[in-house]
Image 1 (cartoon, rainbow, N blue to C red):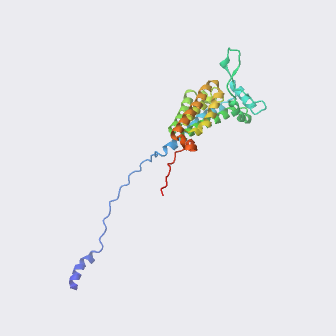
Image 2: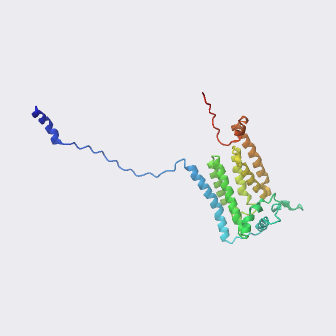
Image 3: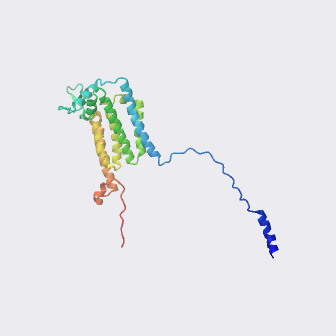
Length: 270
């Protein structure tokens, strides 16, 4: 009996542990270039729109300053009125316009907001403050339009703002080379007013005060922009309130003016 056991166990003891089969090694494939995820694309467009707008505004201004820009012709009158805005005798009307030529009367633009907004930069630098101040104000109002479109979830509209500014720079570079002029200064504000009016009409009525400010600057800077600016303010408010009432019926009380999504009512059962 023991001999039989030895005979059976002998080959196993001589063979020893069996080597484990080796797995075939996988060939390392070359790494593919990482693509931008769809969730990051709107954020990149948002940042790129701001950069494009500010480049379109800053680069021509810097070129004009290097070339020796000085406030001449109408810009001289605007600089003088802007300087007087922080005095005891501020201007009460806008720039004199040529619309009354031949009528025997002097006609002015609707308001002095152009002078008031450029008053501090002109006080700081009477020579270059007019151009630098206009550059900063125009860049800010265009960035506000991009942010308004972003808040409404319409990031494509923010990209369209940047593309429109770049197209205007390509077609009419003189607009950004002489931003303080009252014929050019209201153009970016009118563009921003259009975007803001569209956002307000979507139900984001909290942007309506910003629309009023931007449209007022456009309307007071030049007589030509008075009617479209006033129409944007009124029509956007009407459509915005109608949209808000449609989303939040009058029976909701104070909640109907909320611009965020409504939370479903939770009913607790005992």
